[in-house]
Length: 104
Image (cartoon, rainbow, N blue to C red; front, side):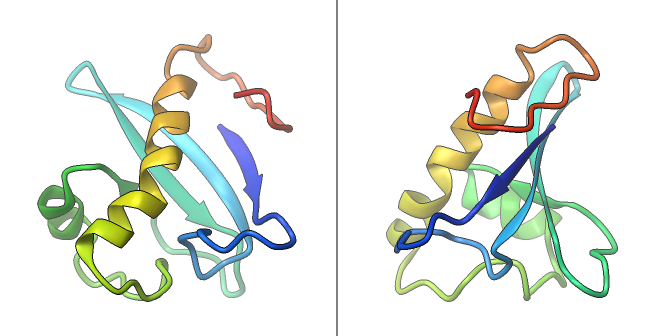
């Protein structure tokens, strides 16, 4: 797990919430990346991040308030790919590791 925050002038921040937790879990022995926004009321479930946009849309069906509006699928992919990559790196850490800074 790693807590992430929007930088002051970050234009490509893909999430509605200004901060949240990035999580990686092995699902069928493959890394799966999740984002849990820091918000009130608390999120009811984690939002799956993936570069496979169709799979991401299917899993996250009904969760419309996590991502900021985007102009095209290419723009969305550009915004989320760094977080997917960072999240997958979390799975290379020892189980239970909680990173508090920008270690990745």
